[in-house]
Every structure is written in structure tokens, then in C-alpha cells.
Image (cartoon, rainbow, N blue to C red; front, side, top):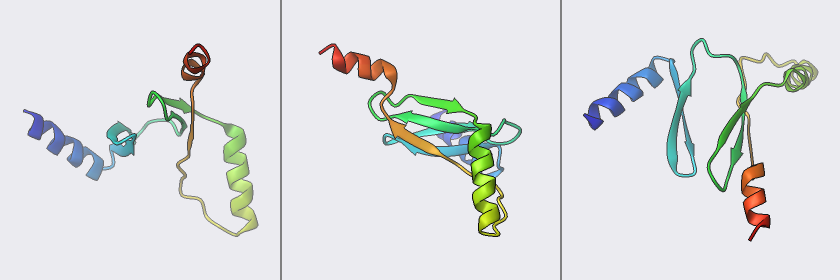
Length: 93
């Protein structure tokens, strides 16, 4: 049943196996445990969520942390904007 599914999702989040994000007014779940580190590009038009990994971004994060004598335990980055497909549709109007 639907309540069982939502209760189970909440338990998986609490256990650290899933991450819950709210995007465009909807809940999105993704792997948390054992899933490669990544960041996100989020399209504000179609709600697309594009995962990416950037070694350069991690190096910058680590350098900034060193400058501030800060121990990094993790990070989460969402870049909001408009994806290529939505921009093409907007230009075609």
C-alpha cells in the first residue's frame, strides 16, 4: 500500500541508505550509502536532475577547507538553471 511505501522510504532515509530531497515541490529519493559521490544540476523548468562528478570541484572544496582549517565530512551541491532541451523549446516558441 502507499502508506507502507512512504513509511519504508522514511525508514531507509533514517538508516542512511537513501537521501531525500525536495525539488520543485516534490520529494526525490536517491541512494546515499555506497553510491559514488556526486553533485546535481537541476532544471527549474522540467525538474530534470542531472548527476555529475567533478574532481576539480572537490579539489577546490579541499583547498578552501585547508585555508580555513576546516575538516570536510562531505558536501552537497545543487546548481539550478535551465537544461538544454528546455532552452531549445523556449527558443522554438
